[in-house]
Image (tube, rainbow, N blue to C red; front, top):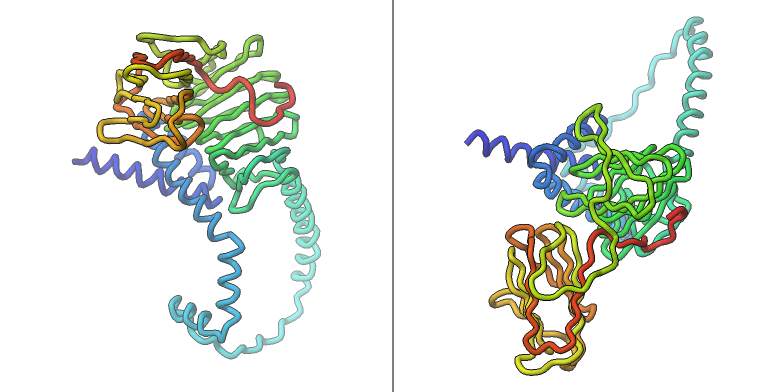
Length: 398
């Protein structure tokens, strides 16, 4: 019973810290506590809870910060005043008291000296703060779609604040550069934070080029140190991280424990997609399968069976995802069909001819696949692994 309470308490705490992070109200101690929860023994579960909380909170900030909401509040306040009076009553605000003049201040020679001493210090501190704010750690260079940070849309030339997480919706992308020339391209759905010397990637895929100073990349379950000149692609989903290094590029180091560094190579190879048939051993938790059917005869069906999930059945007119779950394909029955299966851990996404994406949650990570062509003529199946070898936006040095 106590273990269950402790588990629920940790989940509640990680959600609370995620909300504070999304609202830019988290301090250094909170960031360290959140990182410890995300990298603990229950890291994937904590990362999933944090991601859901971040997603909802960022979406609320986008909606409440939008022009429609602002205009509605302005019209309410410009009415007969009933909205403002009702709001004050709801908050328990009392009518203001009549002002009372303060007694005249007695001249104090030491107070004058203190003012003359403090004013230059305050001016210097203000100038320093303005200079620091005028130099953000990273600057947006390109945008596709509508990424947001702190409830505001991002555009090229905008500086990124480490206290405001960047939310990239599905199908959108953006790139930014650090002060030393390092650069990144991120594709959605993704959530990330630009740090002065690196990047925190909660979810999504990022292509990164490190320059003179190198970079530190944090994910829910890993911490990577990129040396100068490193080129790395990183994908994060459901708290799991996959890293790929293109051929001939410098590798990276990972800290498995505080104060220790270990050399790592590529988790996922960028080999050319290979043709498969029959029963195939799958390469790992991240892979994509493309099947192109040229024509149909006999039973007119193509079956894909995962050892950790249901059998997917494609016909000229339907796609069966599981028992009792059948999707009818749009358009007229077609001889040529293109099925794309995207697997990320226990999450499988299926599309046919680039249409609607169907989500299938698997019981566990699949390790084998069986392809049966029962009347699917010329069905060519190609398996590819790892993040895409090329970023979706231009990336200098890649």
